[in-house]
Length: 145
Image 1 (cartoon, helix red, strand yellow):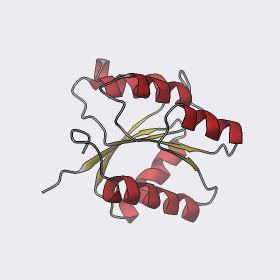
Image 2: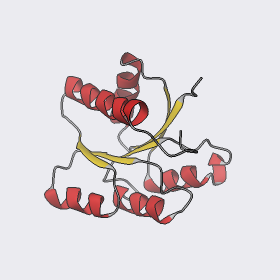
Image 3: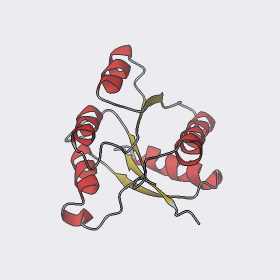
């Protein structure tokens, strides 16, 4: 029996957190979603520091680009520099469709870059597709899932 997948959502917009939770619920995707609201909290969670001591390592990170304290690019760089974290897939999930942002994230090691649709149905479809692929189709390294 496989365990429930764990997803870390790094998102400062409470509405997008609610939408993501709802999309996962309606798609009946078996995952445990933890949301943090800034880049520093994301790194602390991943490293199991402070109030995140004992937190389970996520199988997938969904990160916004423009975040308080540390932006998504900085979070991505930290994950890729850390040997204990670098195998975790990171999907940048943002409103920016800027070619510069896309290139910058891939250069830093993003596994994919997804622009958030502006409507609810589109957003739900994107969350379903991301999770179907990363938690259902893709084979992750041992110890990640």
